[in-house]
Amino acid sequence: MENYFNYFTEIEEYFWKKRGTALLVSTLDWALMDSWKQAQIPLEAVLKGIDRTFEKHEARRHRSRRINSLAYCHQEILAAASEQDRAALHGPPAATEAFPREEMTRFFERNAAALESAAGRLQSVGRSESAGTFRSIAASLSDLAGTARSDTPVDLEDAERRLTVLEDKMFATLLQTAAESDLVSIRAEMDRQLAPVRRNMTAEQIALVEKQFLQRKLIERSELPRLSLFYL
Image (cartoon, rainbow, N blue to C red; front, side, top):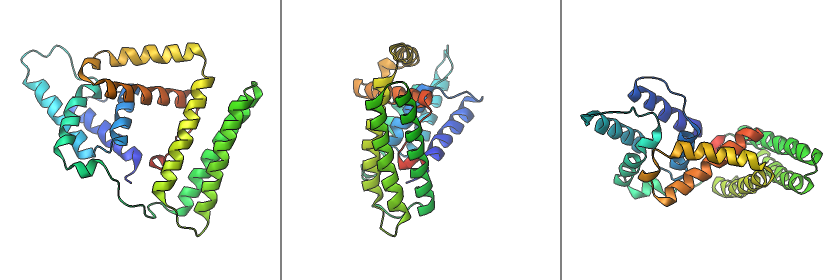
């Protein structure tokens, strides 16, 4: 597993370089990068897709707008990825001891503590059922921390599957407890950012990006961590 944030940083800096100026990456761009990472699109394919997008843009005689978002590169990135060996996009390597035990232990413990704190906040506003869900997630993370502290071999693929389930439960709870006005605001922002590129994406791609966008916004507003080992 390559470092999650290195993947993001490499793409962000390369995009800035091609554009010629630094630009604050939007939530939509983060959602797209997240979807590429989850689809296991290699960094090389992403950078190649960015190159091709800028090359085609420069070749146009009339360039009325600048490339201000990674969304304009999406189709070229998918095309570049499809040209690479399909095996590189799927089937991650067998689980190994890729992370130091101490780091994993701290990661699980820190996230468990964050969920416990969030549970306390929910309990204080009468959301007992949601607080219980967060406490159960925290307990599972503490259990993973215990395994990481022990001499028991850690199956990273199995741990990541478990973390995916826990994240799904966390997101479902955040969605359930979010104020309607907040969700409407997030939806409006998402629609504005997707509008220029929506016609260039399939319904499946749009659904994935919308899901990532919503999750990232809910995480930001709740100040909760991502649980995947990619964030270790």
